[in-house]
Amino acid sequence: MTSHDVVARVRRLLRQATGSKKVGHAGTLDPLATGVLIVCLQQATRLSDYVMHGTKQYRAQVTLGITTETYDAEGDMTSQVDASHITLADIQTALPQFIGDIDQLPPMYSAIKKDGKKLYELARSGKTVELDPRPVTIHSIDIVEWQSPTLTVDVTCSAGTYIRSLAHDLGQALGIGAHLSGLVRTASGLFSLENAVELDALMQDENWQQHIIPPRIALADMPSLQTSANQWQELVHGRLIERQPSDPAYEAFAYTPNGHLGAILQQRDNHWKPHKVLLPEA
Image (cartoon, rainbow, N blue to C red; front, side):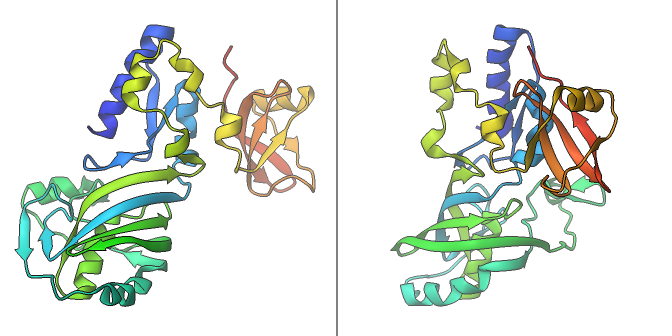
């Protein structure tokens, strides 16, 4: 099931309940992967760019000795060698080079665009292009299990990190190749498997709306400020409001006097400018 398939199913629920079809997701999961997918409804779809940039956590299975054209188990095999000589010590020696701020080459089979075309479209047409490395941060890689030739690791990383590339690059560092054979996203920002709801259970729940998380909770780790009635009216009409020394810097989420998420503000000198006004829904 793809991320698009999940959105389509939730859209049916929302349309039946409200007539609205405004649903989106924050952070695509590869078809191979399972786990946390943040789904945004109605006005919250305008917040997806902010929600998706949170730190990600994954449990990944890496199979050593086999490479594929997609860097995962869904692609055609491109090489196979014996990996039985690789030890846990070899892996522990190789992993630190991937931790920290690194430049990572994305897989050729990815949705990243090159000269206006998605890489996977170019790959499927038989074209090979020079890939541009992307800066990512891998905070930690913890070994969970090593059963040759399969390695299971927990990875904490920045948004935009390709775990498929990490698996491939680890295989190259070990000199035998590797591919990603399983992936679970265990957390995305403040959202984790522990507080997620399974899609099938959601579809069968007559009270499915009880699972909707208010923006104030979903964005609890984001800079915010509370507006007065006068300030809110100024923002609604696109006007600047004065920024206080104690306010956050650069960007903040503004809440209305009655507690709704009302706007996204950007700093302009000593004032706040409304960047996006999200009128509270009834």
